[in-house]
Length: 201
Image 1 (cartoon, rainbow, N blue to C red):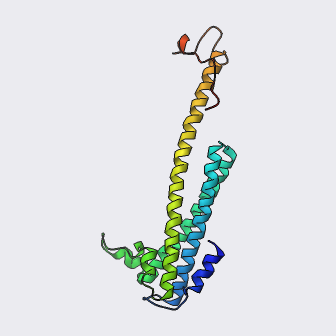
Image 2: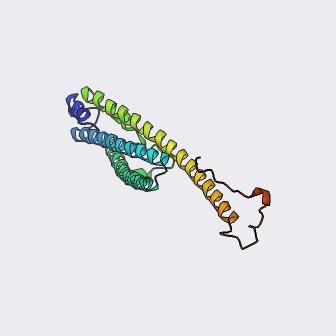
Image 3: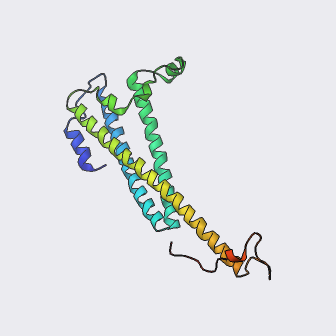
């Protein structure tokens, strides 16, 4: 999250006072939560870009580092989501005990979106919070798309590496590395022996 966006949010009145049933403190916490979610999703987006580049270059070491960083980002986002749930429960004015005592199918106040809560705020604070919520939706959408691209690229790389491994295995069998002298691997026909490897694919 850029410093400019943080300053802009303050300038537009996020901390303009209690409104829409929210206290001043709750508005500040909502702003901080939105900013934190945006910042960490942007960081995750950067790691995903690096991961995609590492996959394109089949750089196993970099791929491993990226996976670790993505896991760390996931844990932090899980913490922020727990904060979101706690804040929404507080704003809704319900306790966890009360929520658990409700019959199945009852509306869950913690399922409200940050945008719907921000819309309850009046004045400049509302506009600033809704801008932050829109920014969060946009970066989350990009993250989801990039995760899907990486998932597909990872599967393609695995298929490619498996194919190369099979070619190498056949080549070594053909040269006698794995087979006994005068024998071919079971199930192999003489016409199916691979004598060259295509390492350019």
